[in-house]
Length: 249
Image (cartoon, rainbow, N blue to C red; front, side, top):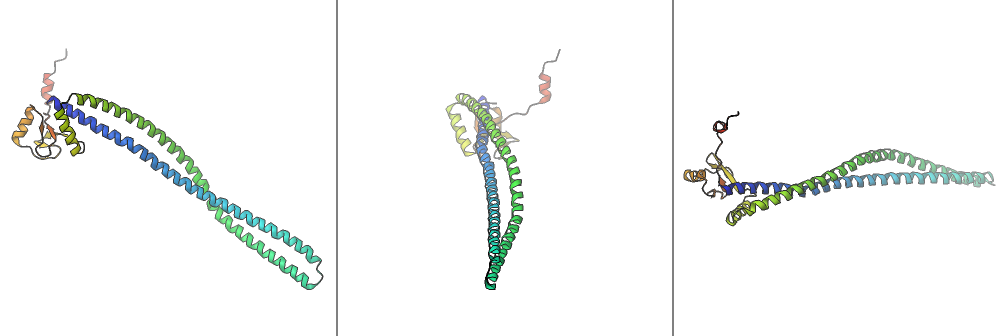
């Protein structure tokens, strides 16, 4: 294999690895933002339920206070009724007392309704509080894990870029320019292997003479169809390799 091909293969491997690392580094903040948004949505829902429950309790207290006011009013009316001078005055006090009793019954009905409404609200709040406690813990773990993963990815990326610089420094300007141009055109894949007489990237059959030139490995060639740098990697004869190994003493 032409030495420059080995360098280009190494370069492409580093570039593909760097692209994967960059993609993951960029995806982690989006993932964290997604789970934080979900948590915030659940917190807002809990706040709404808490507010509804608090309003329910305020309304119940208001009706309780109204009942107390009506009871105090009835007590005074009964005292005044005992001092009535005429039947008309007595009936007037009695009518006002009945009105107070009606208002008390209405308030009690409202309280019963509110108590029925508060039960599911209280259950929802308790359930949501327990679930949110676990969700907050999970989000904090994911945030910590994302920070750690980002640090690891960034280190690997820095290493890959350092190695890339070393590989690039050993390539001639023409080869590097061709590589960058082809890589940009074909979404990062600038070099392909010739397998079974075809380009492994575009799968077009290579001309016999071109394939023979490629096998000789005397110079850098480009696929006549897709333009990628193309190389031939001869199959390894395991039996031959085993015979070539020195016998153990």
